[in-house]
Length: 275
Ligand code: UDP
Image 1 (tube, rainbow, N blue to C red):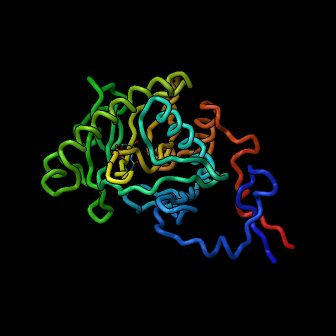
Image 2 (image 1 turned 90 degrees about the vertical axis):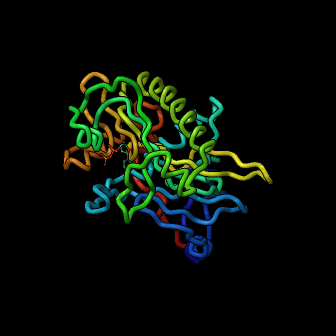
Image 3 (image 1 turned 135 degrees about the vertical axis):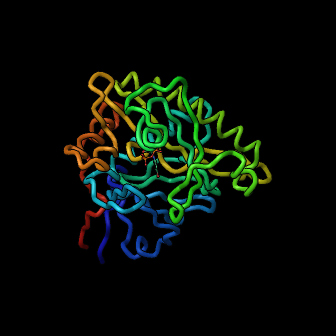
């Protein structure tokens, strides 16, 4: 019988899962950079991080070797830090190099961008110079729709179309600014400037009570991270801009946060042993 090493960092007894059980695991959703599988208990999912990268509304596709391993670690680290300061997230625990256990939430179809420094689409929209500090942090809402290319929306659209209630938007705004303050400091101490980032939120039910929690991932795929001294980009913009050393950017962020796997970002999830 063939066995698959599914969790290389757990004790040897926990490592071996029969391949047919892996294959039976139900795939709930496959996105551009992640796959969601049914979790071990009701209300949980397994989030698998791929090396695939897309940009410009999916028109550019590529592979960033080891990205999934690094984003799994970086997102775990940041979500756990957020939990420490009382910000609820969907994260439960990391399972192995590429997977983490998360709570199943109802995703609010709004992408929240928090910006500290002018970059990306904001520069084009308002003719700003990249790198220009903003007068204050800005929170923007985009409608989460690939077909429409994630358009910028006003709060009015979100409430009128029922994507989120005014109370939910207030809470999302408040949480986003707190996350920004906290992560700005955390990245500064790692020599990194948090230029902007994207957050997604979900509704989590505990019996009859609903809480808004941070969902998706927080990683160099959805943050702009620049070296504080040189302003060198250490995030997905290296891929968007056809720059070199894309993998190295992700590795450097993980290294500075103290979460670079000792074995390096190589993929060991697929290792097999024949019995
Ligand atoms: N972002 C993202 N997903 C998207 C669009 C943007 O994660 O579909 C992130 C992006 O990496 C950046 C921030 O959100 O950190 C702000 O992006 P912007 O609106 O400037 O869009 P972009 O220039 O990336 O198209």
